[in-house]
Length: 268
Image (tube, rainbow, N blue to C red):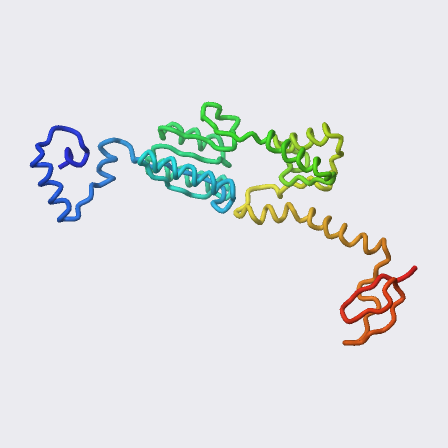
């Protein structure tokens, strides 16, 4: 039977047909566990991402799934949410399951990954390098080139107040993207406004969305403050000249009358 389903070894055609007919009648399926024990491989690939809802991670997952499908493999996906301890647990589980390889956007410690690389036949990092593991291959995007293109595009549209979300923590070493952001603005003669360079809160977080919202909060406050500033400088009084419901009365403004719910600008 094993020769028929594995396609190896000599089997008479009549015998092959009888075996396949019996398998169809009994709804028999070969055991992947048994095949893995014999071949000493599972045919599975472990994929660890920070958050499956993140657009970058979603595209990475889709690409890995598509490639694995063409090669006849399957993928086990798990999310670490930027937590090194949770990532270490996932790595240990993948190692215990003897997956053929692990693809990860790492957030954990070098020691955990070094142990995994000794057991798994292949470990590959995506989008991040662990300095202590130069022997593990890494697939990287051109972060600096992407940031340069974005900044040049915005400056070309006439924008000068450009924010950067994802900077290093105070006192920390700027990353590749932040350095490219600052260098490009400097080359284009546009000053960097430090209040628009925001960093996420330190330490691992379970939810990256909350981390992004917290980091972007100062930028949103700055935007609201600037929206209100012209009204204060121009002497606008919200709701000024508004009378009772349905009433129309004179208003000391550049408009002669005002109706319910309308604001007018008062004269100085």
